[in-house]
Image 1 (cartoon, rainbow, N blue to C red):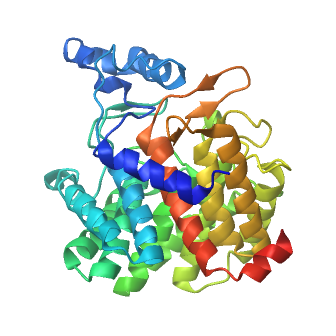
Image 2 (image 1 turned 30 degrees about the vertical axis):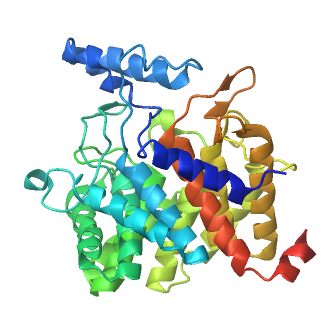
Length: 397
């Protein structure tokens, strides 16, 4: 039977052979066609073009001259996975690979003459309903996952060239992304925009809280607490969170709920507070009850299992093991992984599909969205499995 360790090794080899380059659900505007018609990137045409490439089960990117490239967030995820494998095996090749990728990330920082501090964005222009984000413009989620990867590497290597930009990224988040508007205090997703999204704000708060502790910055602690309290105050009575405040953000999905819980857990642990324990417990109960099926299927939405997506599976691993932490949560994570391997893995291609919908399957290979997340989550799971008392796990199974 295929298992997470076997799949993870194949995924890593495949990624290495491709130099960690690939395609992304949102990279359609990288098409060379837009070199001829750049003004169409913005507005309805650009939005429709991105959604067309994202939703079609047929990959049009080769025809439309969309190149395969590295994504900074995807590279951050691979580094985090490599460090998990290094801790598990003590094999230096994993650490060496992580160092090479981290050195590349240091060269990919968004323009410091504009942003003043370390930060990262996507390698493509990104057109969403709420805003247009040009290539390289930083966003909070990419910045945080890159910063986590660099800081985790610095803890092993003791090299400040990795820890300093990771810590510096919190200054970007505070100085550029902290917002007080519409009666809310929160961290925004990208500079200059005021859309309130829970997972972006909570992850911003969690990283600022960590850096606040590292640097003994009381002001940063207060800002992080303000943002966390804002999202907790808007948690549903049943423990759920909608994605964000705008009218088209009124949905509840699995991986963003998981992000919220993981970020709140990290923030609470870093600040050594118990203020949010009730919100975390209530949110975790909702998550486990409404966003999974009995057979271990990770649902995308609270009211719809589709599309089945490895992003939901990977975040489930982190949420169950980092937030839940019980032997029962470990057993549930293993069940979710095994179900995903049964339903979403393609043995001949040695990778996972993007999404399985009710009536069709999208098998396009997305490195940042799918394979990088799977590699990191499976590497993390396998290290936890190695360190878990077998008797406790067997008892729960």
